[in-house]
Image 1 (cartoon, one colour):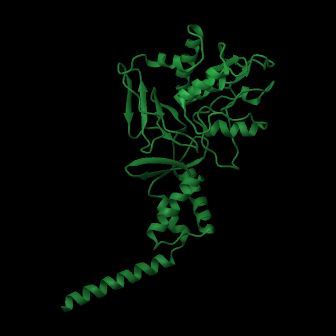
Image 2 (tube, one colour; image 1 turned 180 degrees about the vertical axis):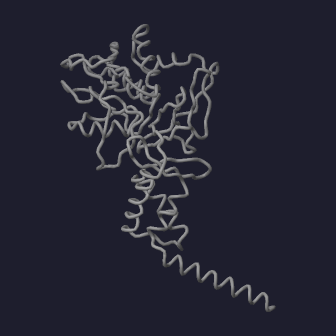
Image 3 (cartoon, rainbow, N blue to C red; image 1 turned 120 degrees about the vertical axis):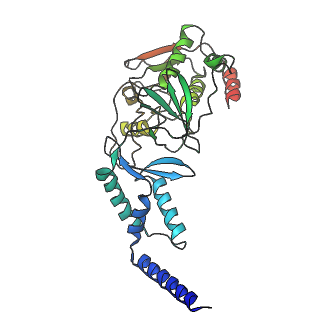
Length: 332
């Protein structure tokens, strides 16, 4: 080996030793903060901190205090630091600094859940693995790999299928009629109007009230309509006794809440879906917009709750329990 090669090898070893020494001296929290800067830190108009990260060629957005963002930080640290993990205190300290940077130094961007608006266009998050969205305007719709809207997702949100261009479907939205127990004419027109209204990027929203006898497939209708707009692993849930729980669901799901209304009066009658509210990480305070709820149902024999504004009523026709079970089997 020549003298020049020996010298070059010695210099390389010295540089590696210095680099290893510096990394050992650097605190774990500092490394985590540097990792977070690879994306973009920003805050929403209500001051909640978010981070854009880039994976597999696309952008993903997470609240800084969410579990998913913490997992991403830990994974990056593990992959780049000899398969070692940061300790809990370092991670907590880093999250605090990252949140402060996003709040005070980062730009302000609006965030949305499932549906958002920008420059007279509506964007629909497909919730697929590539984080694609559909851009909708007066000229039609198109697929966007990265929309100008930062979408966030909550656990349970399911992907929507890719839309089909006009002319490639036989009946369009009218094909929905054979899957739901709604009378033709004005009642079905109200349902179609509610579905289209659910894709609007801001309220006030209409309320679809389904009124029928017991076992008339009201819940099945709600599941089908929910799947058209905002499919979720938990389609129907029991009513919340605590209004605070309703508020939390309203900001973590686009449609706000999913339940069958059976009480005489329910706080959900005063809540609207908050499409542009952030995904708050408990125990952060929850702010919600108090408008009309979206879609209660009740049996025809139950007491009438106070009428909320913008309510659209549609009565469900006579339906046997056997027919309801058959319809549910078709839609599953």
